Image (cartoon, rainbow, N blue to C red; front, side, top):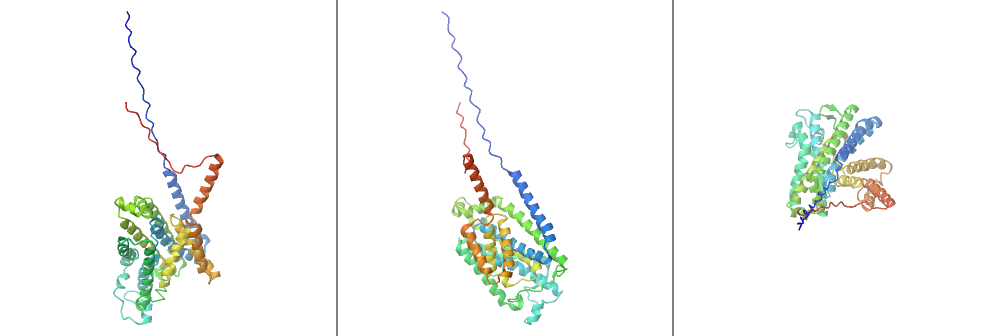
Amino acid sequence: MTAVTPAPPSIAVEPAPTRVVPPARPGGRFRLRTAAGFAFGAALLFAVAPLVLSDFRLSLLAKYLCVAMVAIGIGIAWGRGGMLTLGQGVFFGLGGYAMAMHLKLADAGPGGMPDFMQLYGQLDELPLWWRPFASPWFALPATVLLPMAVAFGLGSLVFRRRVRGAYFAILSQALAAALVILLIGQQGTTGGTNGLTDIKGFFGYDLDDPVNQRMVYFIIAGTLLVLLALTRQLIRSRYGELLTAVRDGEERVRFLGYDPASVKLVAYVVAAGMAGLAGALFVPAVGIISPALIGIVPSIEFVIGVAVGGRATLLGPVLGAVAVAWARTTLSERFPGTWTYLQGLLFVVVVAFLPGGLASLWALARRRDGGAESRRRGWLPLTRRRVERTEVPAA
């Protein structure tokens, strides 16, 4: 009998595991768009504006750009960190007074006293706390470091005690009112309500010369672009993501092991440094710094510009601050008694009907166009992406 040889068992070939390729991030395209945006802004500020605008309008634009620097800091603190800062005029004023004190001493000459001290006749010699500002090596860093030091001291006390929301906004606003009262009360050393005026020179350059005024404008425009670039790197860094997380869920961030007070403190100090730098550059652009420019009303106007432009974006605060400042100058010339009401109405309309500011109009338009295209094709865009794992059965 013939033996039947059993057939060899068939070898099951396992399918190769499916490799899930994550979607490519559009990093190169995004960087190209960012570089193109900065190039367009540089061309607009350095080439188009000086050719189109007169010397007077160009000096006004320099003033608006200083306000835009303050708005960038508010965008970091409020837009990314959720801290409604109604007292940025304090840091703007500290930087402005530090720069103005140095320029007034430079105009007075070695051993001289500012003209307003001689006019009031209350002092026989320069006060001790004025003397360090005669050196540019002290005055220039003080325009940024002094506001940052004040912000660090205040923020350390406030954030450690978990003061936030409306209470933090009211506290920052009270600080601005206190600084104004202090400056007005010290007329012999701060100029009182008049402030520090009639600033003629800027590190050896005559500010009455239109060429030097243009040089000041170019310095301000270049500083604004540098601040925008640094802010972009900050908000796209790990710290920027952590700051946004603190804004959206502070208790969750604390549960994960981070200190929300330290995160918010850094943003608050950075915003104060930007405001101080803006105040320092505002002085040679305008030639004056006074309590009327740093009180409660200017601080609220800073916030209005950020809200109108879009506090959660990079360019929104800049464009909103410039637009509101330009509207204030233009409309106040035609309607001197009604501009304040128009400004308040603009703020209410934006907050009520466009919380994202003017910068959100582009996103809303793209979302509406995308929704219409999706409905036309019969499908809806995905709201989230899910990556499913392919399980390989064990051999």
